[in-house]
Amino acid sequence: MRELDAGRITEAVARLCVAANLRLPADVTAAVEAARRAEDWPVACDVLDRILENDQLDKGLPICQDTGLACVFLEIGQEVHIRGDLRDAVDAGVRRGYREGYLRKSAVRDPLLDRVNTGDNTPAMLYTELVPGDRVKLTVAPKGFGSENMSRIAMLRPSDGVAGVKRFVLETAEAAGPNPCPPMVLGVGLGGTFDKCALLAKRALLRPLDSHHPDPRYAALEAELLEAVNALGIGPQGFGGRATALAVLIETMPTHIAGLPCAVNVNCHVARHQTEVL
Amino acid sequence: MEAKRVSAPLSREAAARLRCGDAVLLSGTVYTARDAAHRRFLDCLRRGEPLPFPVENAVLFYVGPSPAPPGHVVGSAGPTTSYRMDAETPALLRLGLRGMIGKGRRSPEVIAAMREAGAVYFGAIGGAGALLSACVRSAELICYPDLGAEAVRRLEVENMPLTVVIDAAGNDLYELGRSAYLAQRAEANGN
Image (cartoon, rainbow over all chains, first blue to last red):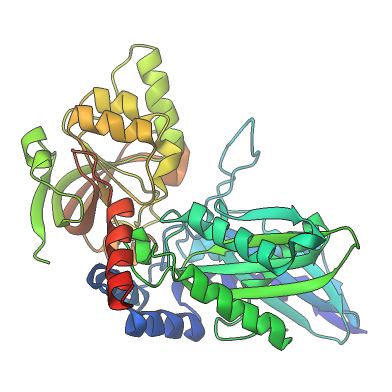
């Protein structure tokens, strides 16, 4: 059994919080650049130019002021023993990263009755999974709520089929419109239970934007949905144009004979995530 | 498009000259306020107390900036989604609020109140907070320090790049820009 001190998890989470908020993954920048090349509507071109300028400023400021709730995904090898309290270690990393990186603290303690800011952006939204091996893979994906608020889930009927899924994804993009800072990224979960389906949609947002579902039928559906979303005309920032979305990413899992859960997790063009393996 | 230079506070006459779709460079004084501050503004009005900022001709910026690192006046400072402030906005417009900077759709009630008040809704580029930060010359916290990023600040801004999304006549770029693009595309496809 490999021993891993929880302090190393704290250090990695702190580093990843800062890194994720200050620089975009290369595939995201490449997707914005490709959207700019494909755009011919002048207002949309201006917006995309400004977005690219913003993303390349490198002045030590976060790309977006909404540095999000800290979504922390841990894949923990079954052969690792973590010495110390894992939950505390992750939250300590978030606390340190958000303080040292001058990131905004956007978490409130209670969602309904007493919306007092926790002051340090904790608690992390923590997702843990046990996997084979003796490594710990950490991914931090800060999630802004302009886009999160536009996310939806539907418990479709099996008979709704592909047409029902397409309709729901397009309705979600239409309802979101200019609100989630388009061009957006759509994570689509299909299958599982109500909660697993939403998690699939969130995990889809961790994929590189130029990746495809391993099943070519779903890969084709991703491409078809992206084309359909980009025919809506919403455009960058909703001012009109082609680039309404940068990518549609589908994740699937088995489900019940009676169900076709379909979740759409909306992300903005600041599609942040950084990963480290310990 | 040549950007129009606009100053804040914004007079009713200056607001009336702006058209939906105009590119604007805004300079002057704006006040930051988002969700929690708006709720407190309305509490003030219910109690018959004055608002903590001069609302007549004022421009509000829906933003909660990230903390300023050393050497910066303010951290990243892009707009937050405006519809969450829709419920409180007509009351502020009736008191002379002349401009709002945000992103995303506004309700029919807000647009109707804007027309009556001769007010303008500007869009700043969402997710371009680092770029917009560079337009902020000074930032001073004026009330509600307990709200952290949501506290109300007076910002002096210079040449902040904005787009007129909804003008004082109620024209909405989210409708008009999109339909113009789709019409152009249909024409290009020979439909």
